[in-house]
Length: 115
Image 1 (cartoon, rainbow, N blue to C red):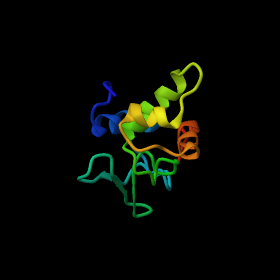
Image 2 (cartoon, helix red, strand yellow):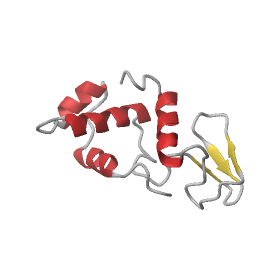
Image 3 (cartoon, rainbow, N blue to C red):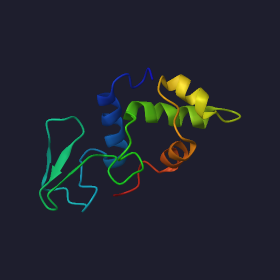
C-alpha cells in the first residue's frame, strides 16, 4: 500500500493502465466528447450521455472496496507462494473479509481490456 497510499494515486495508475494518455468512454468507445467531472476518476461522455470511469465494465465497477486496496490485494495474490487465505488478505488490507468469489473474479480480470 506504500506505492498507492491514496485512492487518487491508484485511480491515476489504473487509468494509465487502461487508457494510456487519453481517456475514452468505456461504454461506447468515444474519445472526442469526454469531459472530466469534479470527483477524481469520473468522466462524462457526450455521445452516450453516461458517467464512466476506468473500472466501468469490470468486476470492480460495483464494489465498495477502494481501488488502492484492490491493487494491493492483486499484488498479494500474485506474490504469495502458496496462496493466501481470505482471512489473511482481510488482515493485510485492514478491511472486512472479502468473499473468495469476488476477489478471484476481480483479480483475474485483465486491466487492459477495452470497454
